[in-house]
Image (cartoon, rainbow, N blue to C red; front, side, top):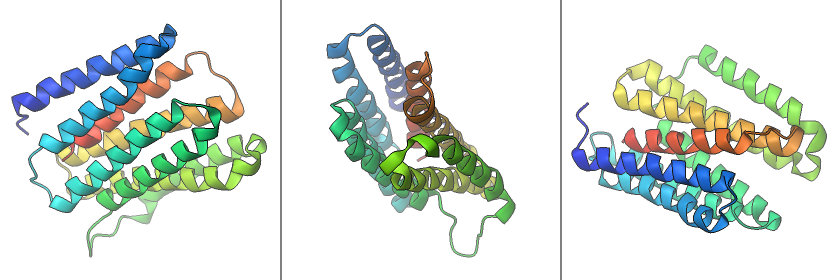
Length: 214
């Protein structure tokens, strides 16, 4: 898989911007953080926009829609607590778009056994979080279901056809699953000291890998 020079340069800019985002958050540099976090996702979206389309055009459109919803979710989560639900809804929409992008084509079903580890992980995660979710129990359950299906479809797409781009999408989906799981555990179960470093340190590479899968 030959990667065009502009994509390499933009990908490096994404990683640099991600590092600056994590640094600004850790150091309490709110001004930098509010600029760099959405800027990182804008750069990721640019990577997806300039990508050639060797896959069906619908795949690129769906991934771009997922990235744009993620950008909206990032912006919502940077503001006050009352925007948390809006952020959750934006990321739920992003996962729906990724599910549609990764789902198998007609006549290419995913083996049921491939779903099993993701279902078990999702149920365990919900069991851990449920006691403290309160009125958020149903929305969080739906969100966990969406992201686990997204990761399972990405895994199935790679297992079915192989190749570099499906591998990038699968790796991105797994990193996204890790990022959201740490975020949920830190928010609803038990505070983790380095949570933000783990959340952002897996989230941005996840989105970049999904963008590079086009």
